[in-house]
Amino acid sequence: INDQAIETPSIAIVLAKKEIMHMANITKKMVEQIAPLFLNKDKKIFSELDEKRSEAITYINLSISYRHLDEYTTMIELCFKALNMFREVNDEFNEGYVLNIIGNYYLEVRQYPLSIEYYNMALVIQRKQKNIRRIILVIYNIGLAYYNFGIHSTNPEEKKFFYEKCLKY
Image (cartoon, rainbow, N blue to C red; front, side, top):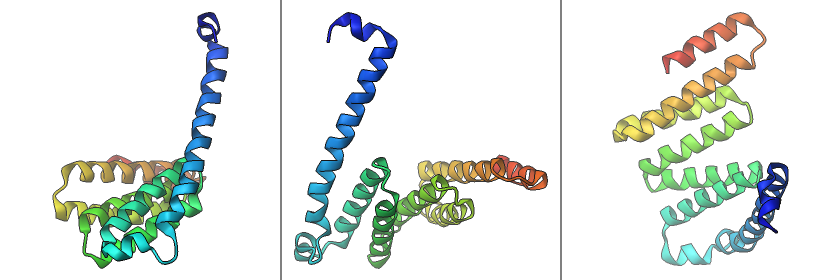
């Protein structure tokens, strides 16, 4: 590729898109190869160490990878596994983090009441933890969910209600 070709915006965009798709395919193959090591039925790696927290964190990291691959079913399944594990070990710090991720999932698939429900659960934990950054993030997400709820409503009164709720957050 010569410098002149890259300077042409349309060619540069096409090349960038091809490179992004190439890297996404490489990442997907890597996830497909690595995920079974952590997700096999006997879970040998983690059961020997007896560290549910480490296993749950791995599930979260994998779920984020699956989200970037637009594989939402696998993503949300891994999130709920992690959530249950964090609850088993009483890890509220990471439980609140996962609840926020689950809220993001429901926001993305336009299930706004569920997204708000999970964000509110996350907010309770973040306030209890006094984690200012996460409190701000969750409040922003709640406002975003209400905003999107209003945008997709066909009822003008609902639009106004959700817009006002959005401003509250």
